Every structure is written in C-alpha cells, then in structure tokens.
Length: 337
Image 1 (cartoon, one colour):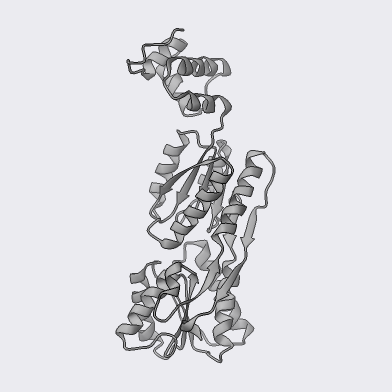
Image 2 (cartoon, one colour):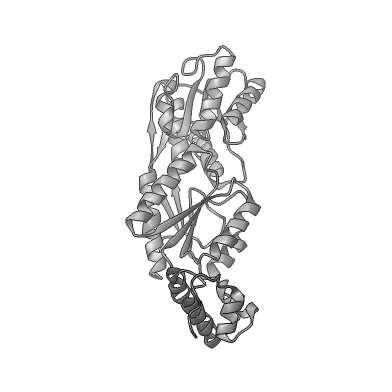
C-alpha cells in the first residue's frame, strides 16, 4: 500500500480499498467491535496508519486499545460543586500524564448515554462519571464489559461493579444535625435534593440517624427540591407552610442554603438567629454570605487523588476497593452559632 497525497482527503472507502475489505468492516474496526477477525482488523489498522485516515497517535491507540484520554462525564457543570470536582479531577489526571475530556450531561440520562457512545469512538481509556439520576446498573456493566473501566464519583449506581469514590455524606449531615441538636434545638428540617440520587439518600440517612441518637421521636420535615438557589427558595416557602415553628435547617447543598437565606430575608427573618442553617459542600461563596454559612466541607483534592489511584489500579488490571469514602468535616460559621 502506498500513502496518498496529503492534500487529498482520505475516506473510509480508501481505507477499505487499501485493506481489501468492505466499508462495514472498517466501520466495525473503528467502533472496536469484536465481530472482525484479527487478520482483517490488522489489515484495516495498517491501512489507517499508512493512509493517514486518523492521526498517528489515534492509530497507535487503536492498536493497543488504550490511549491517554480519560472521559470526565460530569452531571451538572452549572453547579459550583460540580465545577470544583471537575477542576480537582483534571489536576490529578494531568499529574499522571492523562488527558481529560470533559463533558456535561445536565442531569439528563439520555444525554449521558449519547455522550458516552460518542466518547467510546475516541478510544478513551476510561470513564470517570458523576452519573445522572436513574443511571442503570446494566448499562454501566455493558460499558465495563466492552473494555472501558468506569469509576463513579460523588454518586453511586446501585449494584454496579464500578468503583465509587464518595464523600462521607451520611457522616456530614449527621454531624451537622448533631451540632444543632446539641444547642437544644428540637424543631429541625432537611431541605433539598431529589430521591433518585444516592447522595440525597445518604444525607437524609445522616439527618435521621442524628435525630435517633438524640432521642427525637417526632417526625421532622424532609422536603425535596432541585439543587438550585430557586429550589432552596421554594423548599423554604413550603417549609413555613407545613412547619412554621422550625428553628434549624440542614440543607442538601450550599446552593440550596443560599436560596433558603434569600427566602428568609424576604420573610423578614434573620438567618442564624430566627432560624439556624447549615449547608453541604463548603463553597467559597459560603464565607461571603450574610451571615457566613456553616457547611460540611468536602475535600475535592482528596477525591481527585483517590480517583486517580483507583484509575491506575484498573488500568493495571488489579482490583481496587469497590467503595471509597473520603472524610468530611463541619465548618461552623455565623449561620449556626
């Protein structure tokens, strides 16, 4: 086979002709199908490399079935918490000579499936994802069985064999709730989050375990809401309708807490005095709020570090821990004193 003139655009038909196979066979090789014989596959790869149909780096990746590209599939980059996660993951991936490819699914399950299918064509060596709500365990298993290591961060997928790197959500809301209960407050509420995501379930579990530990037997309001500032406003408006004597609130996230503080100001209430409030995530803006917001601190640097350690183990075909919890701490500020 001879190399074509570089000024001419090489097509999949040229590759097929050079390799002596059909166009469909070339397509199967490009999508990493196992329906092509080793002999035909090697002929296609040789033709791709010699004709320059893809960059040499990509051709080499096709040969070895591994590149240095890692797909970061993030659920919602409009959420400051997710942005912090993405930055931490990128930093640690660069440190181990991996190149991250960042995509945003917008909490949309179908979009997640679409972007993953597209990224598979780029021969990424692994997927690190914060899975969209209702991500199916069987779908993840199919991705893993196709030869793509998968790591879940911040959220789990029930019964998936993919390793998960998680902040200790239950501990975080537990210690936040205990901080309020230890001040003698017994009329509490948990606001924000949606039931189909694992961190919501864990944070609610921490809230209820703290109530049980302090022998609070009467039911406390738990109100779901999208994790947005407007979600926090709406959740607080609902709360004052069903439990107007609430004295303290544990929020699913800092962004929810910002909305709650907005709504409290609109009601003429003083956060931290009339009602104490604690967020989750410890965003930088939480120290700039009026009052400054108490929050559960998540160490994203450690999550990035643990994720990359797990990735290295998977690529070396060893068996990392299925579930890794990263410790959290409570940052106490004016809103809960």
